[in-house]
Image 1 (tube, rainbow, N blue to C red):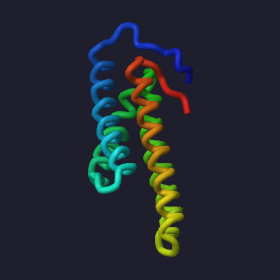
Image 2: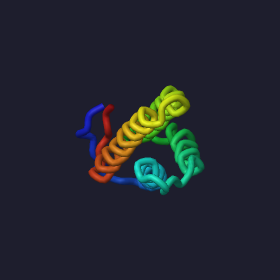
Image 3: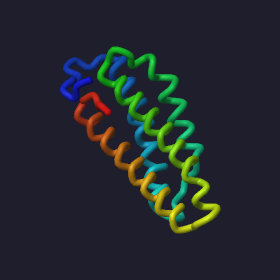
Length: 128
């Protein structure tokens, strides 16, 4: 997909998908910021809600520039979850390596969410 796809004539469905996309991005952003700020963890409940929104609405976005955003958020959550699980044993043996690994994953997660939000704001597809 190209980043050059722009919504020229927004319609009701496109606007609805965009609204759901923003809700999902904001929930992801809250979780991402909480992940990189110690003591500000809002919990995984918001992330699960955002993931469910993305999974339910993804089919509605097929064939639009917004489909890439739904896939982007879903893959971001799945990859971050996998990376957190794979690096979890570091916490059992060594605090510092676990903290570094999870910090890097959290920064990567935040970067992906902000990058997606910027593209969504421009009305562009995101490739990844």
